[in-house]
Structures are given as structure tokens and as C-alpha cells.
Image 1 (cartoon, rainbow, N blue to C red):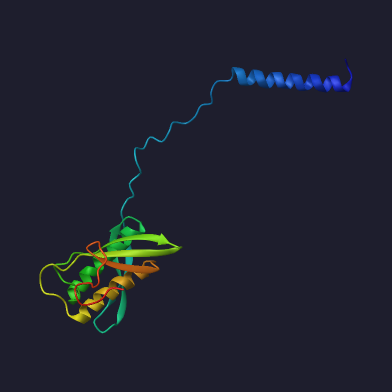
Image 2 (image 1 turned 45 degrees about the vertical axis):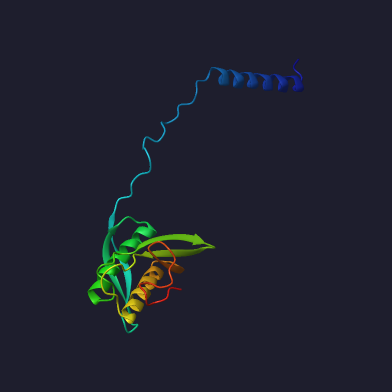
Length: 171
């Protein structure tokens, strides 16, 4: 009975019985309650400086920093920048006052960020001169590129179009 292999067997049996007894008599572990939030938490808007790139009729470009209040999401930040860009371009006469600010959506394709800028169509009022329309299109593209887009697609009223407002062809 006092041989080593018998003592090892008794030791293993004793520890096994203690382990089985602990598992049988223990209550379920106490877990913290599940997340009590319903839905996703809302991001809080913050005031931040965003770059806009303004291209004039002569092709000269300048970068301005404008202050906007927006949540820190790429599309929201670029949308706020395009709304501020519209105000600057309207003041310079390079955007029709009757056309609202464009909307933007972006996606990633083959590790490249593609920004799709949706510009409202020119429905009423006089059109722009050719160079003013070129300046508006280049300003949209350069601002999207300044916000980290690798490629920019411009659509009119949510659909692919051949021209922006009738004079400048879209790529």
C-alpha cells in the first residue's frame, strides 16, 4: 500500500475528487450586466478646421482652412468642407447661387479611397461661363483629394452624367 505507484494513484484520485466536488457545488459565475445602451452611441459634433482648395478661373489654386462643426467621420468632414467651398465659390461667381452644396459618399476599392461627389443639377437661372464651371469642378476634385481621397468621381443628381452643368465634361 505504501509503494510509490500506489501513493501517486491515491494522490491523483484525491485531487480529482476535490476538483469534481468543487465543480458540482460551485454556483454559476457572476457576470456583469450586458451593455445597457440601446443602439449605437451618438458621436458628438466638434469644431474643427478643414482644408478647402479653391481654383480660380485662371487655374490658380489656393488652400484655405475653414472652421466647421462636424462629427469626426471622413464623409461628414468632407461634406462640411464642400458646403464651405460652395459658399466661397458663390462669392467669387464660380458656383450658381441656385445650386445647393454637393453631397459626398466614399468607399474603398482595391485599397484606394474613392470619393463620389454628388452635385445638384442646374435647373433654373443662368448658367456659368466655361472657365467658372472648370474652376468649380477642379475645386471639388482638389478639395476631395486634400481630404485623403485617392480618386474622385463627380455625378450629377445621383447619376453619372456627361457634363457638370452643360459645358464641362466629367471624366
